[in-house]
Image 1 (cartoon, rainbow, N blue to C red):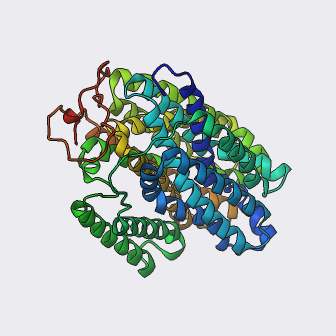
Image 2 (cartoon, one colour):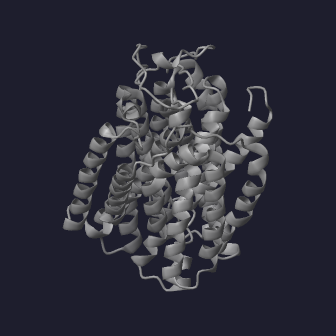
Image 3 (cartoon, rainbow, N blue to C red):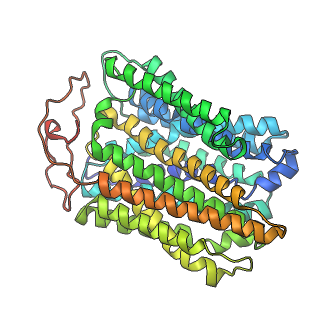
Length: 498
């Protein structure tokens, strides 16, 4: 598509719907878990695997999914992932046993690991870097922020009115529409190389490291953070990560070009996105547990009460992209995470007899815009200066940071809640535990503020020798992370961090 082709905006809408569904499915089962456990006979601990199976396969395969899209064709891989996503969603809804549902959720996670980085890679190759791409990334980030918070809005009514199966059936017609429209709106693109290499050792070690890390984090609240299982899995993840880095430094066709990780702004932005995901998922999870477990709200009532949060996320993402263009990514990310920290701080004092207007609404009004603004600032910072040949894997890194951060956040708040739920009176004990969980969200957001302030400073322009590549598509220019993007992007040889 050319810069004047109006189809690119329709293509963006299609990609944002795909991103929304992928993020939504990571959280939408939260409110449906009690109904799923009753319907399929899950044990108290086994029901958590409905979420964990998705997060494990999704987080573990994101890097490989992005690389496959770069080499085999982004539109083709996106449509393949979408087809698998729709079929696995139907299988989830028709599952008659707990084992079938967990297996189908794992397949759904694999398809999401293909869809998400591929959709973001197509976006990067559809819009030229600068203000227009910033607007596109704002809508993309807004759809992700909306998906992360709208799960509480959509999952409740579906579970109450139609049954838990419909949190999965919802995906099927959307996937069908995406498959029909993709050939009409999306152009095919790939990284042209003489030989296609998927870097099998790099793929295996990266996937193994991510799976071990996510599994350790997901199981930590039950097994204990210092248990042999948790520490052993984390140690395995570290060893595999070291092997991965050594492999990538030597292979001629790496899964993840290390030049992407050497750029301080790119690495820092992904760390900020990780902590934002931890804060957002941790807050949403704790809020749903408090609303249903302490206040006794039905999933329908709780979902409707939280409509202000996803709407705020959309507004925050749109305002965030305009501010990034004018003042840079760092102040927007810091401001967004500050709003999240203030929202969590307000919720850390929720009482047993809490009310919506008095105790929840002020925090929701802050939290939604904060998530949206920080998400778009982190996305722009993490993807600025990424050329076409690396767009898939860079998108995979950015998406993996948010998803693994989400799994980490849920594990942290669950551990904080369980360790502080003490006392004879049940509701008072639960409330005290949730107060500790919200306090943990404050700590996560504050850590993100520190990382954004230190690591998202505008990089100084410097000229380096570009790496040799057989790609035929030239790397697009980079705009600085400063206040006003240049109308004429610099050449590839002047990209910071390359």
